[in-house]
Length: 106
Image (cartoon, rainbow, N blue to C red):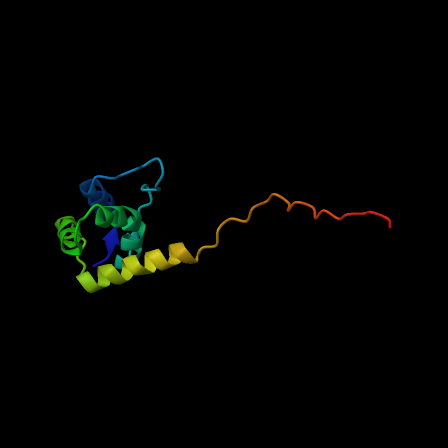
C-alpha cells in the first residue's frame, strides 16, 4: 500500500507533535513505508524516550493506516539514528590561535 502525505499528517496529528512551520507537509505525493517512518522518526524517537513501547507506537500508527511490524519499525528507527550520528559536526570557522614563538636573540 502506498502511503500518502494524508497518512503521514494524520499519524503526526495523532502523535500530537505536528509542526507545520518546520515541516513541509503540503507535498502531495506517495511515500514508501520507509520514507514515512524516517519522516516521522524524530517524533517517534521522542515518544520512545518518553517511555512509549514499540508496540504502542505501532498501534498508534496502525490506527492511522500506517501498517508496520516491530522489526521493521525498529530497523528504520535504528537507520535514522545511525544516519544522525554519522553526519559530521559543523566545522568551527574560527582560526586557531597563532603559536607563540619566543624570538629572543642569544
